[in-house]
Amino acid sequence: MTERVEEALARIGRLDPELCAFAEVWDEEARERARTVDRRLPLAGLPFAVKGPTGIRSYAAERLIAAGAVPVGSTAVPGPGTYWQTWGQGRHGRTVNPYRADRTPGGSSAGSAVAVAAGMVPLATGSDGAGSVRIPAAWCGVFGLKTTNGLLPSPDRTGLASAGVLTRSAAEARAYLDCVLDARAEVRNPAPLQLPLPAVYSADLGFARTDPEVAAVVRAAVDRLVAAGVVQLPLRRPPFTLLDPRETWLAVRGGATGTGELGVRGAATDTGVAGDAARVRAENNRRLDRLFAGTELLLTPVTPNRPHGHEGPGEVYSTALTWAFNLSGHPAASVPAGFTADGCPVGLQLVARRGADVRLVKMAVAAENHTIRVRP
Picture (cartoon, rainbow, N blue to C red):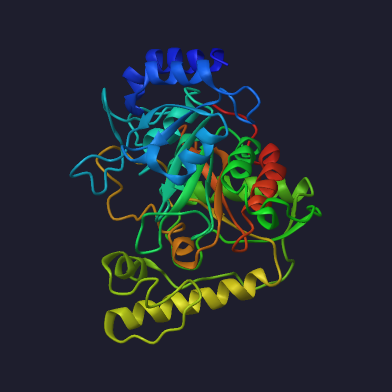
């Protein structure tokens, strides 16, 4: 049971001084756990990383440890004063994108994405309040899942953040869900998939200023899914749009309206800023409920932009296409879609019905063999 942990620690030792994915590495504690783990457990000896300084106390980490997995360290998250510069601050310095060191890996699960992308660990925990799992997964070329809001315990009082995971592939994320959802048989055992899956694609959700090259990479991935018989897009249908959730998300995060006043499916009853936020949230929920009454998947780019430099993205909100689903509560995933001409990874976002987390991962497994072909 010690071999995989030793391999992970050796790889961290070689690569982390350059990539700066880890804030702490627990060499001796990991070795001791690996030596004493019960070999009969489903994840016995599997090395994993936890997001940030408090990640070891998360529900997901506790469930993974109970299944025999071995935490090897905590990963970098943004340091003080990095409002837009969403790199992590690791023990060796600023976290960098494993594909282009001059670009950010995204955040806030920055170190988790880099650790998985570089093969330091096969799995890392994350949390996602606006895209904090999906964005770094997209920009580091790995799989990332935001679970349905409220499905797993979260310390976030606004209800926006939910637990997530980053893995090298969607198939590897299924083991994570099997462990953290062990008491939820109705979630763990969805009906079999019937391909092609009915899906709707939107490059911008009606409001985002998506980089044309990013949109082209994602659209090409979607076209490959259609050609492979994985998804089927409607022949004639108006583009699916949402109201821009920016001000709503900011209001909820600031406490103007939250889950106590307006739940995931809540109605708009407040006035002023809170009332405007509630109306946008309720209208977007209605549109999403109508959409998922007749389709399995909503497909979009994960971000409107490619990985930006460490100075920040300027006026572009990298969260433009992700934070709507933190407000609505839907599970969402990032699957590698390809690369821009300058070598930046691009992610395809898959969004499914609330509570369909395992089914979403199964859909991602069906998709990921066709979304990306050649890595630079």
